[in-house]
Amino acid sequence: MHLTEKLYDLFLLEKQIRGMQSRLDSATRRCSAQQAKHDQLLRQQEEMTDQLKHGRAKANELESIAAEVEQKIAHQRELMNNVKSNREYSSLLIEINTYKLDKENAEQEALEQMSAVDLMDQELVEVTDKAQAQKKLVAAGQSEIEACKSEVGEQLDRLISERSTAEKDLSANALSTFKKLADIHDGDAMATVTEENRRTMEYGCGGCYLSIPVERVSTLMSSSDEIVICPNCNRMLFMDQDLKAAIVK
Ligand SMILES: [Zn+2]
Image (cartoon, rainbow, N blue to C red; front, side, top):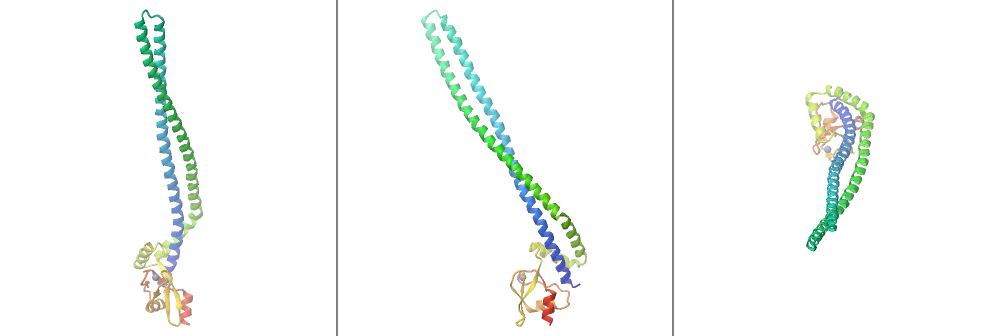
């Protein structure tokens, strides 16, 4: 087999392999993105649970402060029942009024804290719902990867082994040129020659659609083992057997 034909066979295998791998890669990337979102929601959930715990503790503390002050007021009232003088009575009354103010303040703060806690509670429920929905997306992404693997897995293994057989049939030089061009052109290392006008001998590159100098077409027509490159896009050129036969006729 002619070198260009061997390279073209390798090119076809390479394209199929890259196509399959890119499907698998994008499924994997999509799943990782969903996983990252899920992880973020879990971290948020954890932080909010912690905040809520502290918020509740603070509210309880304020409520017990109010209750303590209430007890003090009750105690002062009892003392009032046994006062001996007006002075003693007034002084107890002043104390009670101060306590009442303290109690109001503590109750007000406790109330505010409770509504803050309610809000946090609501937000936590929302984040938890989001995290659960996100978990389903991660699971869907994982099954997509599995489906993709089971679909392409065997075929991909077979193509990879066919590729390594095809590679062994090439010189180190031809192979390294092919690999370099395949990487540059994302798998499209080669392009087929297209016929624009046989009479005027105009031929084009199927990769970049620009015209190819006729000398390069002649080299491809000859039995030379020279690799012919498109001067515009640098892809290796390949000429279809049918086109070759048609030109020779
Ligand atoms: Zn080209």
